[in-house]
Length: 246
Image (cartoon, rainbow, N blue to C red):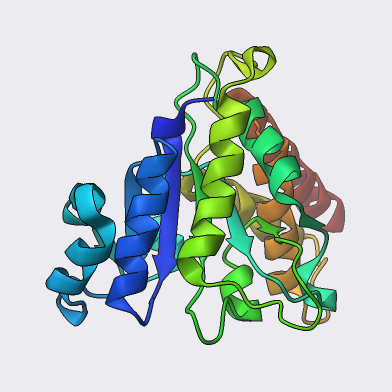
């Protein structure tokens, strides 16, 4: 696993000090790419540096975005962290399960990036924010007091990824770079446009179908060739259906 290809995303964090602690947690585990959904000027640099100590360079190099989608567009997998189960949240992976998944697509010969998204300290990730991710990760904790500090959650996930990176068996598993989420979105549009043409969406439901295909294709780690084959298949189906209707 290339830890340099792990991307930590903080979505509108409240506390500057938590950002500093998160930077330190990342540095402890050789993970250095930080992206923040929000504005740099909203945070107190002195408080961040105080808690980050010698890891303040991570915040200095952090890139800011206006949404989870834009922050993870160049990644192949986007994992949203949550402690709440729910019908719309699907199957949630444990940290060790997620780290194995991350290792399976970020071998030495792969340039694939894997994003892990952490929500606001007060609200966590909402259902709509999790919809922008392709899978969910949960950290088991006490039923009586299950809420983790943001930096503690970052530490646990980063540590698990670091431990997985040390396992020789997980190195160089993949010899290609899976699609980025930006490319996946293009593929999903082609698929659902074709489904629209054959009358699949007679009732509302395209958005749910788009979310399904986005998550499915991301988890499948398709190659560019496989994506093109999928697009051609659906395009031909739509074309044949149009001829038959004519």
